[in-house]
Image 1: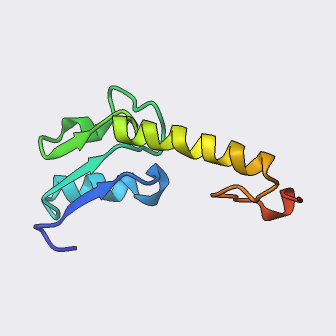
Image 2: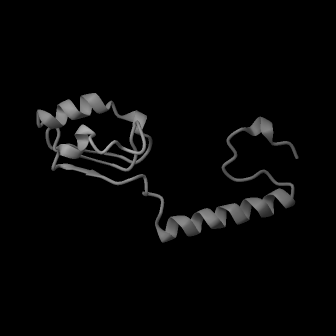
Length: 100
C-alpha cells in the first residue's frame, strides 16, 4: 500500500486485519486510519489503535445523522405499506422467507 493512503472503514470491522493495520501504522506505511466499526465492539479502552495520532475512531455512530434516521423511518413505513399491499418489501435479504 502507498504511504500516503488513508484507510477508512465504515462497513464491518472484520474487513480490516487490525494486527496488520497496527503494524502498518507503527511503521508509517500508511498515513492514517479512520473507522466507525471494529472487530470487537465496544472498543477496549486499551486498544492499540487509540495510541496513534493519525487514527480517528467513532463509536459505531456513522448511521446516526438526521438524514439517515429519517431515511430509516421512511424505509420502515414504505415496507409496512408494501406488506399490507402484498408486495415484496424493499431490501429483502431472504427471498425464501417471503411468500405472497
